[in-house]
Image (cartoon, rainbow, N blue to C red):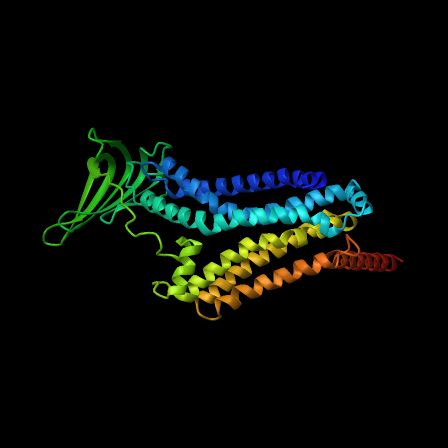
Amino acid sequence: MSLIDRYLLRLAFWPMVGATGVTLIALLLERTLRLLDMLSASSDRFGFVAQLAVNLVPHYVGLTLPAAFFLALVIVVNRMNQSSEIDALLAAGFSLTRLAAPYLCLAAALTVVSLVVFGFAQPYSRYAYRAVLHTAQNAGWNGLIPAETILSPSKDLTMTTDIADPAGQQLSRVFIRRITEKGREEITTAAMAELSRTADGQNVRLELRDGQQLRFNAEGRPETLSFQAFTMQLPMTGPARLLRARGGDERELTLFELADQARSGHSTLPKETLKGELYGRLARAFGLLLLPMLAVPLGLAAKRSGRAPGAIVGGLLLLAFHHTIQLGQGLAETGRAPAELAVGVPFGVFAGICFLVFFTSLKRPGETPVGRAMEHLSAWAARMRLRRAAGATGAAA
């Protein structure tokens, strides 16, 4: 690697790391808040949320890495273009292909990383995430009742309260539905309640005040009990475990397992589903190799049309590529199209666009179909403004 190659890579490295880190943290924080809300009744929700967040990292790395790499290249090339460094390199005999070469090498390294992430890290982390989430959702009741939350610690018990203090122990307007050991329904309401754990830590004591209880006697007739003070003891439930082994979902299989099961035909999952998942992961990983051919010309074009149009168009292309790959996998899974065609066509279209943008910029760096389209759009908008201004002047006259 020459000095210029190292310089170009160093310029792109930190913006890429920064964009990946910021996006990854933002996505994890948003998901963590949702998980905390989902697991508010769990006895160890903070421990579970930490495990779930760790297992989400490979999934979000796979989502953010292509966008961060593309954005870093656009920013770096535009910065060098604005400071005339690109002009100096071109004047010294460097072609656009030579400028893009170090970024193509970086894309190849990131492709290997993506193959590891998509092919091996994500399947194991996805299964671990589901196992932890299942355990957390079935970890039992921690003895607290959040406000405006319907709790069902077991199939025989349902509770809710309209108002609760931050600790979930001082309650107002409480509703409890319970199925007794004899299979009879029992409904209890109370204006106020105070909740506390028993000394053994296995039960919860609920001291209800100013309420009523509806229950059925042995003959099946309803009975109503009004009370000023009533004590009820409820059991706290224990955790459940995820019993099934990894591999019940195609997204839990590694690349080698997908290829092996699709080839053997002995899998419980449909063959086209396995092939669609396999080709989809490969398309996302090898799509990184195409990004320098799109980002470098768009970064050069930003000197004339501004950075925003190129970044926006490139972002829309990446988003469309991701969703069309997902659509292709869905078509393959439902049997509406062969997996090779359903995933190969979106990849081929995206590759064609990248090659078109790059090779049309070889003779005149900075001139791309995107830039020309933006110039035509800007000229059209300027003409519309002039016509509107002329119409307003005529109306005033």
